[in-house]
Image (cartoon, rainbow, N blue to C red; front, side, top):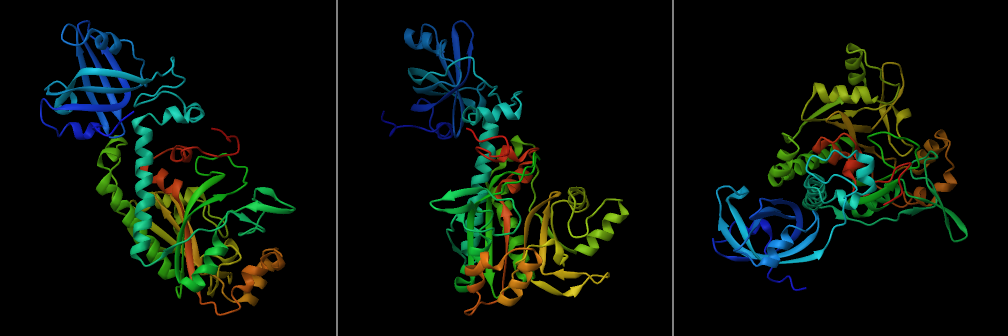
Length: 435
């Protein structure tokens, strides 16, 4: 079928009255007023009212308009007319109508703008849920998030890199890996590209990636996934303070791009998005702050309640919590020269809290092989499993720092979603492996 003369709906509104247009899309709604039948057509760019009038239209077309089920795919030719009653001020008088694909009925889920179908069932029929304009809006914004991240990094002089997703040992420690058979060997799905991006930064200085990660954690929360995407950044000759600055400016750049390009989508979700401010607090300062509100904080980690409180205290702000206890950070984070008031060793690691939730974790990495081996042993990991990684720092490795930022979590927070699964096209969690 030739679509070379196709007009997108948003472009039809700027065409001259009486122009002929050829539209392709989905039947969003049909209304029958006896002698006039309205067909609301939808494509990725918008919606338009089209009409067929009994006696004026071709009889076959008038009959067909009344029979097409919602969500069916059609090709429509017609004449553009001004109309004060029609949304957008224009409508199309249908001259020719062809059904490309009939949608079976009843539809298994409600695909209206304000769907009453619960999220689990919508995810079961995600391919149909994606017909909804609200669902599409989430992924239009997410597309801009990814593109803006790439644009920012390229302007920073960083190189995009592709890293392996199959690894031979844990990249972060712990047992939360998906094990797999790799020919005669045992392998794992990567939980991070951490070690690889470090190796590369030690030669190419500034590197970034959009990387899929898998974590075999048996959680059922609204903020975690077992498969997710992550923005990763690593920079040579940089400490934790330098990469915190890069991260702050990166998120500001992304949010600015959304504000500039997605007014319609933000209004649809009733979101007033602002480019965030930046604030720096030590872990100890946050701990003291939370005592005032009787909110528990762990010895070396923030609780969800404390993250939420930081979001309330500092709205539209990225809060960098730094000088983190070393015990709460992975083996590769550089110990700091500082200690807290109890004599506990601190680290050059940090977390970034935005809209009441952690969006990123990062810091300065250990580039000294002997210190790395020591830290691996303290974390009860076998240095032999990390031989290639350790050896990569034996031949001229500069000090370096970096961070990772969850794509779906950032999407969830920006769009004000209640469940991170809404920010994933086809989510993978403990119970969901299809579609």
